[in-house]
Image (cartoon, rainbow, N blue to C red; front, side, top):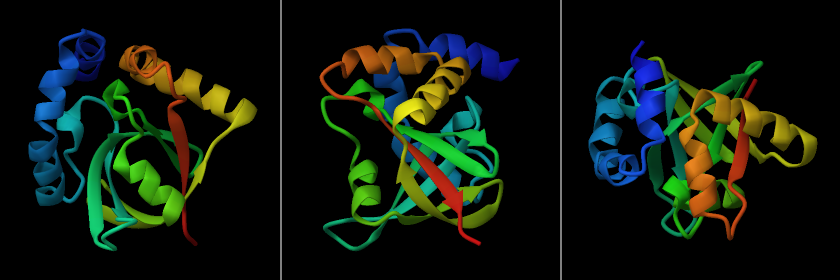
Length: 153
């Protein structure tokens, strides 16, 4: 029930500024709960830990995700902002990352998804979180990057 309500609220134009202001709190909540509570429980969520391409330091970001088999799929929407999010550039520089999900930390390798697979995943992502359509229209000058995070063996 809650996730259905959040999906409706996520498409509301005023949602983005409010949600963006909560990212720092969400990041702390994700750390404290070891990934059990991320994105305020709005949709399936994880904490992505990348290595900063400039700093070399770990950077964490709460993100919604979609499960696709054993892989996790995330989208670099940046709330429909002008630029791709920093974590997306970090993954391009170093595709090895970690995910905290449900109290477990998982090593993953990221791959940007393109072509028919991207289109299929885009449809599934928007079905899960319709607000991504709003982000896509705001960022119409760029294509939102979609990443497949494959757990390392």
